[in-house]
Length: 481
Image 1 (cartoon, one colour):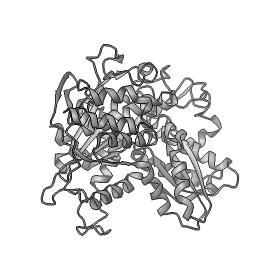
Image 2 (cartoon, rainbow, N blue to C red; image 1 turned 90 degrees about the horizontal axis):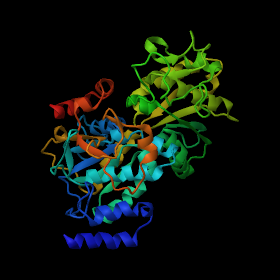
Image 3 (tube, rainbow, N blue to C red; image 1 turned 135 degrees about the horizontal axis):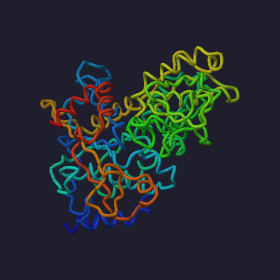
Image 4 (cartoon, rainbow, N blue to C red; image 1 turned 180 degrees about the vertical axis):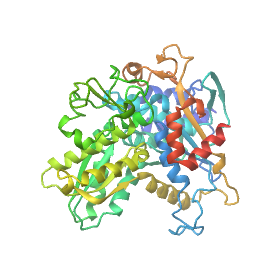
């Protein structure tokens, strides 16, 4: 196995560009086989049609991309752009990873720890590239029978914004030839497809704060919109806390509380960037029943502490905040489309439409919101891009075998066997340990990656998956049995 290692090292020296800050980590995985993520003894071969399709996200949000792909029907059996009632990927096997232990990825950028964020993304890709996984959350035993992959989909906007090019460089170093597909380019192409070439339109990017600060969507849209003669305005809204609420992170949502709690990190009256404004309370129209809002006086208006405690109320806050940006912009063009720039956000599509309808009927916002507003899920265009790649490279599996039911699902959990790991009840990292104490290139396996089962996700998360993604839910539950 010496020759493959030397080949990697030569390529490494020649093409060390974006991966330069990760030199220690890269050298460890390419020259030693002790690491769970090592590629030093990986038998390198070009992708084959029988291989699986890899996909990862920082949590369950990426299942919206997975669901859109496995349910896609854009092409017929002759590979023409005509639906035929047969799922485009019905003969393909998928391997999905939810890096739940390290989510949400957005906070790494907010805490100035983007090198660690990129390392998480690299590890996600390496997990899918290799064939290893851990037996269970309570065991450090490693199994070696995970399928190889022929394409890799980054089903996470933040990971795409900060790490896609790094993963592409890593795949070149391995000599694997694995195609890397991200959701951002797909989302931008999707919104421009429905925007008239001479149409004036405001396009909103609703994404995690980290994706917003990267300006990845803005840069991509600006690079693609040259053929459009109309005036396209781009507005961004960072959805702080929404993805975390969907993934049931207790620093942002906690159904066990009936009053404000000090660990809360979502929008508040005092947050300078994500401020709950009392004069906008009639427009937020928060649901205050069943402790879906936490506050310290008899009403929200009287309270000096307000905390959001439901997915719907997080959505309400951010859509109204977006509408305010439209209202206060100079020469505002009505909002035509919203790109859902986080894979978690499609879970809230019905709520978003409901809030937009409410705002459209107010004097304050009626002139700034089109009827209808298109909600763009980048997952649909991601499915098309993946299909086209497999078709162009003759990588579709044998049509005689239905393989979707053989798809595998994995999730990361804190590594309780690593002495340096700091957790709350052994189930999740402490906030400071997760985002501040850990650094890139420490060569520590903070997590175990294990088969997903019902005990490793909350009942709230399972209910969301079952309600919004029924086919994906069935595939997951069948694998759990």
